[in-house]
Image (tube, rainbow, N blue to C red; front, side):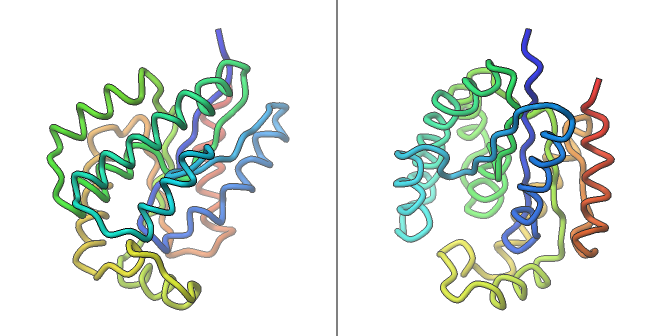
Length: 205
């Protein structure tokens, strides 16, 4: 029986989730556990190559979803599952919920297709906890434009796209309240991490 936990961080671009990846890993290590920080798309050499295509190459929405799940399959098989098997906690910047939010909510890809890919690709690997960094899309967009000199093709999307992405995230959270912990990302980083700590404490035996 493994004791490794799988934590995913989700939210629209600019919500601030990436800021908390390393602090979460530090917290996990302070509890006496190994911690691995990773990301999607990416996390493996092939995944990082596919990430560049996804962020910078225009493609059909269904193609985008398939490429995203191809990168995810490599991630699950080569990084996430082996880490959990050796009792390492995995902290991932995005996982499958992002596909339901971005490709489903944002692009309009069939949810039935995404659910099929989810079942096939994940192979029974699911986050124990998903931290959803929730923020008004306009505020998130302002953060992205202020802090990113060369935004990728997702970051360049308009407010309507991110409103749909946010709505899809919140729908996922409402459907799985036991896994999701929604964070108010309009607060200061310290205040947000205090919310994160509450969710992390619940993972401890």
